[in-house]
Amino acid sequence: MRPNLAAQTLQRDDGSFRDPDGFVFRQGDRVFRAVLPAAAKRWREFAASGLATELERAELMVATAEVDPTPFLAELELPAGSLVLEHERVPFISYPYEWSFDMLRDAALLELEILERCLRHGWILKDATAYNVQFLGARARFIDVLSFAPVQTGEPWAGYSQFCRLLLYPLMLEAYLHVPFQFWLRSELEGIDPAVFGRLFRGLRKLRPGVLAHVTAQAYLQQKFSGAGYSVRKEIKSAGMTTAMIARNVRSLRKLLNRMRAPATGTWTEYSRAHYGDEALVRKESFVSEVLAGRRYDLVWDLGCNDGHFSRIALPSARTVVAMDADAGAINTLYRRQVSEQQAGILPLVLNVANPSPGQGWASAERASLADRGKPDLTLALALAHHVAITANVPLAALVEWLADSSREVLIEFIAKDDPMVQRLLLNKEDTYLGYDRENFERCLQGCFLITRHAELPGGTRTMYHAVAAR
Image (tube, rainbow, N blue to C red; front, top):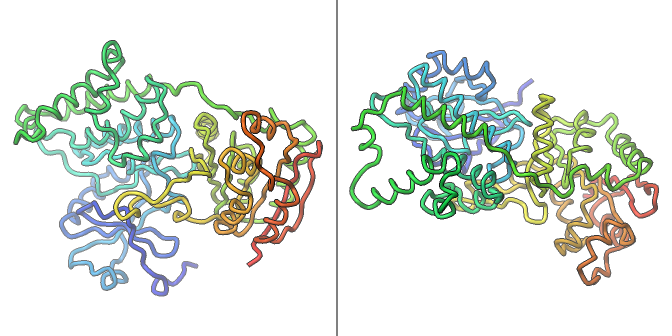
């Protein structure tokens, strides 16, 4: 039975204010979109065109249905003629600066496939921002149903610049220059400026596939028309842009993207098998499985997930597992495996727990912080504490307090100083970590949680704990 909507508060999405056609809001775990009168007719034409049904059936776009707007009109102060849509719920929102290379490339290919289908129906995508894509586990979905508009004769693809800035250029940055794109996208929410990006491709670098056509040419046009009283869009329209020309550009972009490959990186791939003996790994797996047996969680975080080995163990007990690791190579490998297995329950993200994504954009709320997107029922922090405490110099007490603030329940592992992996971290550091020991860790844990069980793994340097919130 659905909860009573009237008893639940409406929460307007802080990230959807830029759209003049409407905005997203939530009520409980349901997601809605208000469509303002100026866009209502276009939405209904799109919904009746057959294109919307085609995209949903092909699992390219989130399922969407028009609902009775009456319960929302007064509180949202919607003008007469407004519509309300309900969207398929995305279990956990993620952002392009948290995606791996292949996730971003699949998002780009998704938008190109949708655009090709649009052109065949006489429609086009007005926008091509990477933020119009979300992942349901490892399945990319387009979420902005108000981005569709009928093709206008002679009009260019207005979303091309966005596509380059937020999708193509970041992929070129990593594929061609071996520079991770996540840091640049996190600092530039509008994407990479072509004039700035073009400076990285001088000399023979300009001959890399797609650079002249999509970087150098865009930088030239931007410089030529900026502040000159000219409109690039009007100039292109006057030249007689056709849908066939747009379709050729889309095919060229798709071919370019399919040729790109992520550089081989990754320090901790297959960590579990490389750093645990068979007996210790089996015991660790058993401990996690025994704790999870018979339990059911809506949202689980796996911090420092590496290859996702324990994310997969947790998945039968969870609706969604968000698997996070700072190693982009490990996350990309996990994502590719999830795609090949058609697994929807695990969302892999490139994220450093010692420096998680903050609130960003307008009023620091346009892109929500990690914690503000939904706190987990259970957090896995396996083979993590020593990295946070020694590599990032975060006190054990601070780590445990952060976990307690984020999650009601934790499965956590403590690795002692005499373990080879901790010794490796200390190799080029002065050992000033006087509070890094098992006794202090247990005191910190007991200060915020109730320890329900623990087990020392074979080898004597690693201990597993299951703890629940003390308050």
